[in-house]
Length: 499
Image (cartoon, rainbow, N blue to C red; front, top):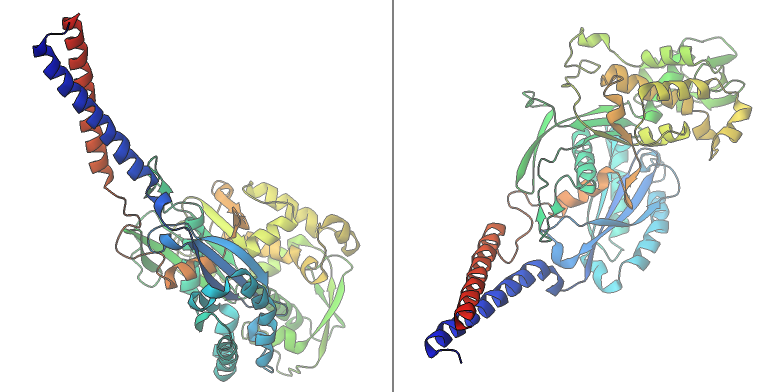
């Protein structure tokens, strides 16, 4: 029989052991399952990306309880609006709303009716409208007013149609890339959102129809205030170099090329274009070639907007690259290393980059995506540019004339921009990831735009507030584990003595 003097310590030890184990289980459960006790529910946001060549409607969603404290926004729907970019509707602004409505009907089906009036909707217009505003401000305002009037008839919380700056477009694209890649937040073993240890950010390369943007964090803190944007995300400050090159988008650059070729071929029946495939023929009106602000400097003295210009493809990649090079003013940098082109300051590129939009689609036409060496891009570009027009339907997985005829130009333009403009070389080129999306979300500035405008990214405080801090949780866990171990040792000693 166990002595009475042994029973009391034994009971006390068992009691403390049970209490300690109960506390360990309780705090672990609360810490790890707090999120599961919250109401599920979803919230939605709508962004219309009004680019120079087309408008795209994005619908994003996130758990209702996560707003302002997590990074779990995902793309749930994407719709390309029929027709051209909104800047092309200067003669009929009302038609913009009619085209948008096709996509918005589907959006109304996706978002529950009882949540539509609380769902924020935004329209951000980029370089196409920036150019139109410079050319005809009243026409640009009429288009935006037409969109505003349309959304007043819709059930959503429309927060306005804006023309965003090129710098903002670059920053929002950078935010999107790093947000989708998890460079801002990740879940730790306790399912808490924390900043990844030693996380590196990814640069963003965006090629639109009317402008192109480069955004990244340089090795050294940029001392040029005009090219640096400070962004505070999840309590951390990022100094981002960003620049938007107006008129260096894919479409506007090709117009400048056509204008240059036409200017130097006055009096000839056909204008030879070394960037078009061999034996390809097409024609454009002078207003198409010279009507843009970007190509206007090439306009001849006897300019007639209705005159038709014939272009004949010669498929010569060497001459094509020469013509593309003439679109860039590299000499304005005077050999300075921290200069890209047109006299624009740029620090040396650093780290990984994501190349999306026009960069991705052009590389994809050469059967190249993801990461690949510079020489592989060169050889694919050279082979493609040497093809006859009649062979392209068999080469391309998706053949559309307006895109197929321009892939050689686009490839040469991208090569020159990245190598001679941004100064990527054989060593740094493989760090560029030519990609369209991450997971199921498209890489576009629109996500970063919505995150910023809905305050999904707070400016001063961390996102996640757990039931208790990680240090407190670890301390309590360690304390009660030690108590449990001590109780077990005491129990063992008492039982040995009793026997």
